[in-house]
Structure formats: structure tokens, C-alpha cells
Image (cartoon, rainbow, N blue to C red; front, side, top):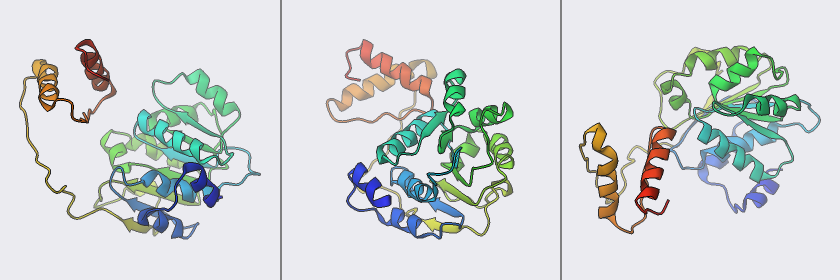
Length: 251
């Protein structure tokens, strides 16, 4: 199954981190520490895939993520694997009627934000008795975004868990007890020196009311070079996209 998944993804060889995650004993809990953009999604999806049973009806693996964008990204990757197992997403802002309809024929893999998954659990829109694998993806971010209480509640509703996977882009001094991790294998692929060669950091100070104009001026100064703009909220992405479109930018 893993070989077929890699063929569908057009991946010829796994990286070191992905190989290591597959080599962890199937029943053993795992902490996967790896930078963003390192292929962490496959690092936990492939072990999850190996644990799915075609004859089991109901949700078998639950993946909790801190954002809608990440949930959709993981769903896209899992669909591209072409395993034949059903996958669905639940997240804030999505139509709950659509989600309830999807869950009436439960997926093998359910991906969602803690707040929305907790909402469904309280309304008993899906059963948890067949869930044997839990993934807490970008757990550090989930804590930062205030999902601790929801995650605690969700994990308490999963009586049949056999494997727990926690991923993070930062190493935490203490893993909260509510995760229930039991003597986990820790795979640490965080680089001690994460600075990029030749990279220069510059700060531009601007009043809040002038930030969009300041950003546009910076983009114009950069010219036609490829540019990435990172934002901390979806609304900010939409505002900047609208600004660039209105001023003739290529978005």
C-alpha cells in the first residue's frame, strides 16, 4: 500500500524523516519534530495509512490541526495518495449541514480543527469507538491558538486509542498530560542552526493604518522578483490580495 501511495504521489524516495517515522513500531506512540515544509504531512500520513483496515466501518484515524488551511492541505495529500479510504474535513466556517451529511457515512480518516470536532462530538454526529489512531499535527500551534480545552475534551472521548502521533515545528519542554502519550518514540529533525546562508533580515516599522501602503511600497521596490507574503490571519490574506488586485498586482 505504501509503495502504491508513493507511485500515486510521484515520489521516488522518502526523505530521512519520513523513513524514520515509518520505522517506528506500529503500536508505539510517536513525537515527530520537524521544520515546516519538511514533508511532515507524509511523515504521519503514511504510518496512519498502514494502520487502516478496509473491513472496518467508521472513523479509524482522527487528525487534529490548528487551522482550516492545514486541514484542507492534509485532505488534499491524502486524496492524492489514492488509497481508496474515505477522508473528510471539518473546520470552523464550513457548513455544518454539509459536514453532518458527510459524517452520516463516516470516513476512515477525519481531519478537523479542535473546536469543530468538539462541536460534532457534543452532538454525537459520529462515533468514536473505532478510532484507534490520533494525530495532533502542529501541536505547538494548536496550544498557541487556545485549543487546549477542546483537545483535552476530544481525547477524553476516544476510548479505543492505540497509537498517538504528535507533530511540532518546535521542541516543547513539557508535553501536556492530556495528550496521553505513553513512552513515545521521539524523532527530532529540527536543525540547531536554522539560519539560511546569505539571508538578511530587515524590519520596517509602520503605523497600523499605514501597513498596507507600506507593504505595497515594499513589494513595488522588490519589483518582478518572486515574493512570499506571510500573514497570521485569513482576513489579512484577503485584504492584501484585494489590495494587490485593485492596484494592478498579479495575485
